[in-house]
Image 1 (spheres, rainbow, N blue to C red):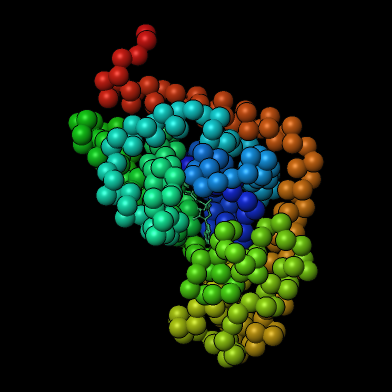
Image 2 (image 1 turned 90 degrees about the vertical axis):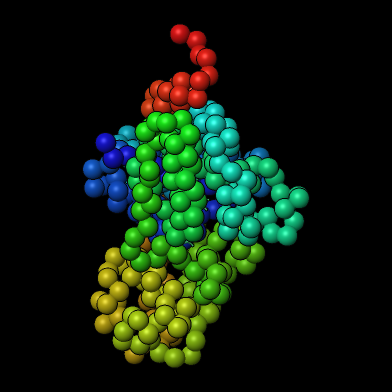
Length: 335
Ligand code: TYM
């Protein structure tokens, strides 16, 4: 049966990039009803770089609340946090022994995050993609909806599954399909159209946070970097104008319109007119969601109960798959 898995790091607030690249697509997949959906707050991934403990706790609950506020139903889908299902760490160890150092060293996210100071990076940061492969393969997930930036990690997941199957002479782990489709699979920084919008960007003006209030959202779009020309009438000519293209993509994704329809609407428009429209649309979509997130956060016990129940359901799927993996590897278990 087709099964969806995806994860989000609870390492600070979520951005519009996380929403358009991930959350929004997650609830669309849930609504399609054709796939069992499993969604995870990957707190063990988050601590590959330093996280203040109280902030990690808060952020885990907040991301869970955003999942629910964006339409994930924790009854129809499974919603949980990674560290409550120890099988993730157990399978990750096996994959640490399957994956090669060279594969990990080629990951662009590793190179970006560790930079020139790899000696000082955590071992966990280096092994990060093996844990990610474990997240996915522990459920035999077939489809993984993500933003463009996770593509390389998903290719590595396929490499790990292939090598495991080959080394042990089995056809056990599925070769997972990344699901990266539509507009805004890579939302860019509002200050630099060649850089990804990221929660770790030092400038808060570079991103829209899902928790930003209406005035902040309007101000950030108003100050977003653009070129001086009005908007063209064809989408293709935006390819040489990354900042303009980014804003158009955001508009298309938020309004759920194909880009040619958006171009017909905005052709010849100045940014002075377009930006307030975009901000208004963003507020219309994001405000109800952040209000619902805040409402849910008033009851952290309820969120914790949802996560505990999600972890039980996740474990029910994960346990037999891990047990079978141990058997394949030849680890003696108790009967
Ligand atoms: P993370 O926490 O950085 O981001 C969560 C999701 O949001 C997407 N995303 C974006 N999409 C479009 N534009 C952007 N600017 C943007 N920024 C973030 C990401 O692509 C991702 O889908 N390694 C993963 C978490 C993870 C995971 C997994 C994902 C751990 N295990 C298993 C899928 C399956 C990460 O750091 O995502």
